[in-house]
Structures are given as structure tokens and as C-alpha cells.
Image (tube, rainbow over all chains, first blue to last red; front, side, top):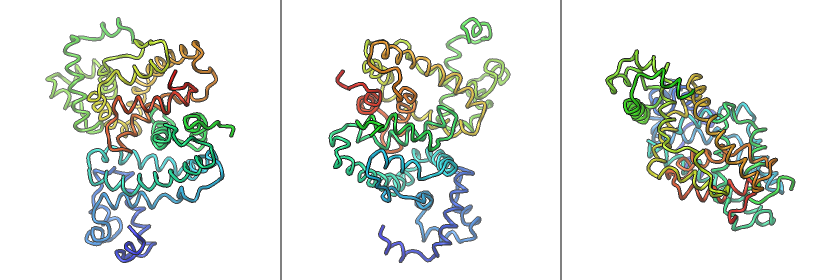
Amino acid sequence: MTDVATARRSRLTPEREAELYEAVLDLLREVGYDALTMDAVAARTRSSKATLYRQWGGKAQLVVRALRQCKPHHLNDIDTGSLRGDLHAMVSQEDDCAMEQTSALMRGIAMAIHTNADLREAFSDQLIDPEMADFRKILERAIARGEVRSDCPALDFLLHMLVGGFATRALLDDKPPTQEFLISYVDAVVLPALGVHASS
Amino acid sequence: MTDVATARRSRLTPEREAELYEAVLDLLREVGYDALTMDAVAARTRSSKATLYRQWGGKAQLVVRALRQCKPHHLNDIDTGSLRGDLHAMVSQEDDCAMEQTSALMRGIAMAIHTNADLREAFSDQLIDPEMADFRKILERAIARGEVRSDCPALDFLLHMLVGGFATRALLDDKPPTQEFLISYVDAVVLPALGVHASS
């Protein structure tokens, strides 16, 4: 969606929108996606359900938009001159506390994604696809610099490696993902899989 | 727990136990861990709650034991003579249909693991730790054969890579994990991260 379309559709101030998104994420962490209702969002934010539906179309769109807006940083700001630098910058964007919050949000919707087609579609269109496009720019620069071969098979699995490491840290080690863990993981797994030596 | 201890404690035939575990897994897929009650297990299997508690101690232990028993194969049967062969054999133990069932079960408990300390402990003791120990044998043989350096940093992240690839396939690609996907992932990510070339 273009900024023009967003502006035309929106009748809320940016501050009011931010407040709404924060309330949606709080509810998501508290009760999970399936138990989160538009009634609860309306009550907590003192808005009308009609406004919520007019503005976002439905629960899936509202939740995904809230998830998207809560990411304070964006990958396309990153360009350090090396792939290792870019990936380290990427996993250092959130401090450990923010990362644990993100981890809780992801758990809150992981199961719902498999049973709600509209959530899956919004999640894919608004979160995965843009993330992939930004990743591709980082990787294309690494290929152009000669750091990674353009036919390296691991290029297809970059998000699986990274999201997998992030998501399994808590499951396998009973520890939250931290910057320190993710930097070790990038150096030990992601860069070697891409044929880049950690010392470069 | 030794087989002797299991036999002494058990008053159920192996067939009856298998039937109970199947019912627990069905319930887990249907309603998830939090909504699964011992009452429901007792009702569905026509057993008394007292029997269930005497036999398993509690819901967490019963669910984890059921998850463990439903794995028909074990890693310690695998010894093909190469790391690539061992990892391919490992990801080929379950057919695609069984893998999708496993994927659904994992989603069913992933969120509960973070909020139930007793489930987390049973999951770690009875599923993660034995899996890690079997993995270690596969890796030790690969090190002894000279395929992997004993100080390779990726050795610490083998389960993160594999479970991560498995778990994120559905989330990122909206496709179930299949043998074909996991074999590509092992060749593109896991083996190169361990310093093994896919052609070996």
C-alpha cells in the first residue's frame, strides 16, 4: 500500500495509531491471537469497532500492521560494507529485552498462522515479503563485492537459518535469544553456510 | 528410567499404553496443551484419572512420554559411514505425512513450553537431552573420520539449525516440511556450516 493510500484511509493521528498498535500487542502477548477480539481492542482503546474495521479491515490486518509498526528499525538502513558487518548490525538492532518481547509475540501467533488463512496471508504480504526483499539487497551487495557466490545454495535459506536460530534458542536451551547468542550463531552457522569466513 | 523400573511401575499392557498415547496426541492436536485435561484423557480412553496419575505422575509427563513413544525410529540406529549419509538417513526416517503430524504436535506445545515449567522440564529431560546425546555420537564418529574438525563452532548449533529449518518451513513458506526440503537444507546449510562439502 502506498503512503498516499494510507493517508487517505487514515482518520487517526500517528500518535493515536501508535497507541492502538501498542494495545493490540499487549493483548496479543496476554491472551494470544485466537482469544484476541475486536471488542477487547475497542474497549481497551476506547474506540468504536466500526472505526477499527474501517481503518484496518479486520483482526488479521490489524494485528499484522501492529507487529510491523513495532519494529523500530529496518533492514534497508543497514550497509556496513561487509556481509558480516550487515548481519551483526541486523541482529543488534533490538536490545535483549526487545528481543524477548518479539519472541513472545512470535509464539503468540505461530500456532494461529497455521489455522487462519487471512492471518497467514497478511503476515506473508506485510512482514515476510518485505523482509525478504530487504535481505535480498544485503545479499546482492555481498555477491557484488565477491563475498558470496551467486549460485551458493544457502542463499535460499537465509531466513530459515536466522529465524530458526532465533526461535529455537528458547525451545532447546530454555534461554531467551540475545544479541550475544545471535552473533555467535551468525559467525558459526550463517556465514560459513554462505561460504564466508568469520574472520573476513 | 530403566526398563525394569518401567515394567515394575506399569500395570498396563504395551498395547493399552500405545492406545493411551495415541489418544493423548489426538487431543493435543485437537485442542493444544493448555486445554488438554486429564479428565478428557480419562474419558476418551475409558480409564480412571487415578490410573493416569499413578502411571505418569501428571499431564506434562504423560504428554512428553506420548510424544517420545510416537517417534518410531531412533537416531542411534543410524550409522551409514558418512555424516552426509547419517543426516540424510535422519531426515528420511519419517515420511512427509508423519512429518506434518510432528510439525502440528510441535506447534501444539511450543507456546505451552514457555509458560509451564513442568512441561519444559519433562520436554528437556525426555526429548531434547536424549536427542542431543544421540546426535553427539553421530558427530563424534564424523570427527573421528576426519570429516569435521573437533573445534568447529557450528557443532554447538546442530539442533538449532535442524529444528529451525523444520519449524520455519511452514512459517516462512507456507509449506509443510518434507524430506526433499530437509535434504536440500542439510546439503545447503548444515553440512557447509560444519565444513563438509555436499559432494563428499
